[in-house]
Image 1 (cartoon, rainbow, N blue to C red):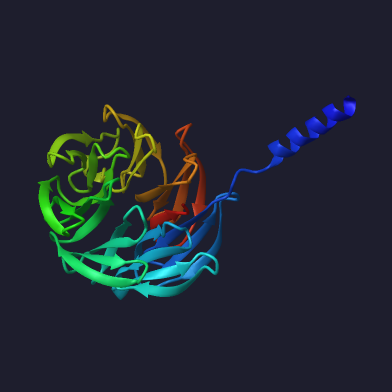
Image 2: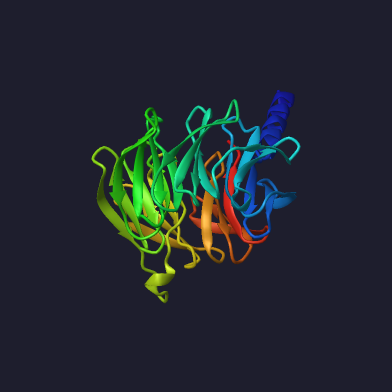
Length: 322
């Protein structure tokens, strides 16, 4: 009998000793022309990959085999093989690609090209350009609805969120938001579209069916001028109950209630926080901090910064493995 209890105890001990699954994040360093690779087990940079000029938008393919990075000054998207961690291919974007998004199948890529006011459509299986969609001036933010039917592009100078029918590839509506919209994100259930306006200092809540702004979130941080609070990246938990908004030179991430739209907390991170990504288990949120050249690691449940990781020069975007 005692042997059975001893073996059971050993088994439980071994199970509890098994470390949590480690994930890999890729960070685009805009000024350094590199991509930093972060291991989430050790929270360290394990590799630095040389890429093209001015890397910004970055994302894994749905199957996790590749990482795509928009190198704006080279007018292309480079493809990194995650096994070798080397650039192995390019994708045909337009001039100065910035942000992009995939459909849920991972077969189609939509790219915002800042310099020619278009969104390029790319077949990822054939790695071929399918066409371009004309949008507003300086397109940047990209999002796709959970059902793949609606593509969103935000144009920084036109100050609009453009609704694009993915079947016809035509703009079907344009919604005016505050100055310099940078990012767009759908709620997981598709009920709301959130758009950050960097210079306007707000996040607009848009009804995707009515194509109308139904509310705006404003931010106030004691001791900071309103002009210093510049919303950029937006990340939502899977249940849509909590939303994190990166506030740029305010060096804070706002924690927002997804239902009431009330700001509940501000998290102090590095300098000029830009974009963020969750680990696949939803336990951690990583943010890129451009001017301090680091990444902040946030415990999502505790809503607390637990780690800072030095990366390359001017970190901009971050991609987390699926």
